[in-house]
Length: 323
Image 1 (cartoon, rainbow, N blue to C red):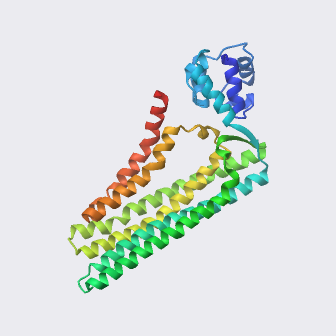
Image 2: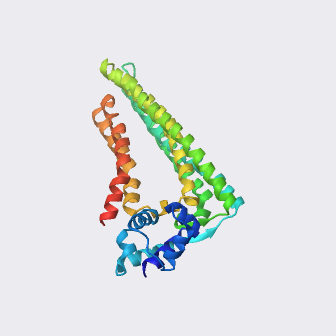
């Protein structure tokens, strides 16, 4: 397969017309037509732009003997089949995903509230006026509360997936929309993501400020029961903020399956890292906190984890390119 065939193949994978590709490259439609007709060759800067737009290496575009990359692009062509969606189907898709996002975010919040309840039970059981038998009863109630909320959350997770089962595999297909629907959805996506950035920033600030009472209680060397109570309060505040973040993130990501076809080429390394990253962070935080009871110190895990989470995509992309 020569350069002309590769450009045509990749363009069709993205369901772009020659004119749409030309606009992305700031060239005329006739130029793209000549490239695909093997009547002209793109300049090097355009080759680099094509590599970035199509998410392939420049070597793949320029060389004819890269059998491994050829095999990969053929697999991608099979995976990213084109599907046509009507305007009414797109509206139903976003309606279902908004409901899915709402339910999943509620489930996540319940899990965090369950941990907060257990920590609060621990604080109550440590009060001097509480007898040993009452302390065990209180801790048992806290554990039952945790398990009950987690059980409800798991039920919500399982039931909510039924809403989007019908869209399974959509992330591996290129969605074709009529021009009016595409313009409308893009405007909705831009507006929503702009609002979500503000909401995300506010939620992160609230999470950071939620740690302040815990820090102050540690500095003032208050009773351990008081410190644990503040830790429980911190988790309650975090639970509601995380609910907003999860809800907004799912809805924001749902636009990718309809509009952002390039995101469907997200590499497997990044997927695997992200799938285990936050569960590991939570496990480290709770393990460290319960083993040491240094709640006024362990909160530092969250801002560090937040910063590192932004580095993950960069590292993953670097590993993907080296591979």
